[in-house]
Image (cartoon, rainbow, N blue to C red; front, side, top):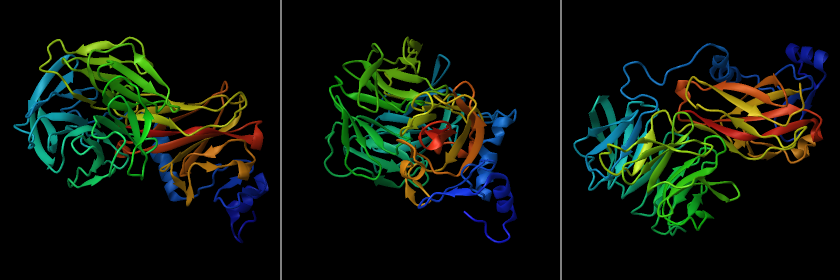
Length: 463
């Protein structure tokens, strides 16, 4: 590609590197020597994004979740317990009741959700209400009703636009609440495969879908559609809670009657995370990327993300059975999605490590690369489109690769070097971006088809 007249920077680059490679029909330009950003995005927003997400990683900067006067601390566990006036917060092994004076509905509470943009707040939902509870001191709270235009609220979670996705068990539908103004829209409509058995659910940060739990089955409501589709059945009881593995993106669910906590992979294969739990009523992720589960007789357990032995961390002095759970500082992750293609020693897999908190460096690592190769971290704000092209975008026709896809928009990129077959980049997400999704992907120059390997994507969301 020739330089425009007077484009001194471009001419200098061509003198040192040779011409850029133009990809017909796709707006990427690759300087051959890769001295510049490998996906040449010379805009102020590009550099601003690098400063916001990458430069803090290089500095000795770790931002706290909130200031010293905060009433809620990272790791505090909120639970609901069928009360019409109270919910509880557990710190360590001490559980404290917070009396709101009434939730403004017609019955008891069924759902609770910590608000990362207002760290002292929890949303509480139940029979005919969703409201905001602000912790003002030890055992004290102020409360305001957000909406009464709901049936039975279960399974609240944040979407990537800081809207609350929830299951309305009375209507048997998935709905979304704008917490700023109380406006509610229906995401699902009409007859659903779960009938009126919808009992749990959660928004999937990687795909934008909503996963719904019913009687012995899980369903997916794909983004932009209004009717759910089955994922898996035969689970042995009502699904009581849904979340996602913060690293692999796999569905995690608690199941009553069978008393199981299960993992469902992308192919629909089901495995037990732990052998058995007594009456598991809900599940959430904590500030360290592990799981917390609440039980029907007041128990709270912590379960390692990778499975194995669980620990009872609350319940000996339970106020009542608990039916939902949320953790301050929890709910973040770097959820794997899409597929990678072959690197020098196998299919490239990209994963990230917890904790997924604002101001804390998240390590993104891809594997199966040739040693000492040059690699790229790509960051983007979308995993559905880039420059007008839908994602994932097949790269094989353009680059001569084999089974490779662009999985994120290209809004910033940075170079690195492979060490020991692994390509690692730290990413620090600032506080102002909490609750939203940032998408990442690795590319590496090595001896494979097309000369470049591409990883799967990760949807990074800190809380």
